[in-house]
Length: 323
Ligand code: CP3
Image 1 (cartoon, rainbow, N blue to C red):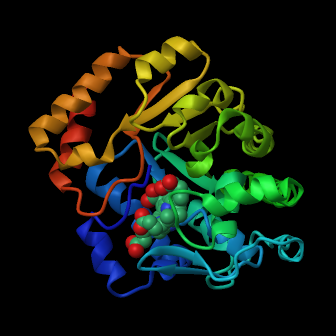
Image 2 (image 1 turned 120 degrees about the vertical axis):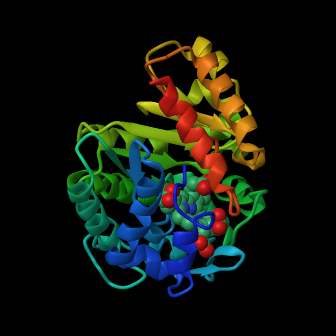
């Protein structure tokens, strides 16, 4: 999950001088911030610094990052608004709306880190990006998007189709630019029951993941609060499922069998425990997965601001001591 950010003093130092949008869209800054956690902790993979919502900005939806999180000031709820979303020029370096920055950052990061370190690209899945576009601002209940699914399913399908085709090309371009694997974040798909998930999330995840599969790069699919959707997620075509802390990974492994990778799922809040306790928790998670070759240890969601650095160190040390 997120590696960089507000828990790192070196990130905060740069952040005082630049806006979040500048940090993401100026490759000099984005590369520096992407590499900060790698330099400090030596993770096995580097995730490029950017945000899932810039692709929607590149399609023409005006995006702002406020203290309360991302905001689309002109939410998309009617047909002309869906139709106005355009095909982006993925290589464009236009400030704040050009996705060329993530591609350039990936090229530079790939050139900078050793072959044995993986470089990860990412995008938001169509349902999650559509949720932000329809809601307008950050929310947890998804009232607006869920209402629209039932009021005007055709409109939502039109929006999701558009997002899926652009997102597939976008991730393929990230692979061409140097990403060894890509992660698709469907953070909000867990708001849906299984039937709505099968109609509004799964087919579009699949369309994106199928496009990436043509490049040969492995894919990681993250859904928050998706325990009730496990059987469906396994049908997405993702090489790896990234799961939150609500599920027991050994149980998931028993249910799904050995054919799929699993990533997760330490609760980010648990890093607020003393380092010794963090070590015990990480060791217990590793023990529970019994050297499963298809398992990637990670958090179950993004790292929280103010997370103690000593906890991240304790996590990395515990994993390294097992190797
Ligand atoms: O992991 C990394 O270091 C890569 C960068 C990354 C960010 N966002 C940077 C970011 C990644 C992979 C994301 C993904 C993302 N962005 C998701 C999917 C994963 C998840 O967390 O569920 C979502 C839903 C978003 C949308 C988004 N961006 C929200 C809701 C917020 C505000 C909430 C928050 O955590 O602050 C952002 C802003 C954002 N994106 C920050 C970072 C480091 C914080 C900005 C700051 O420093 O002020």
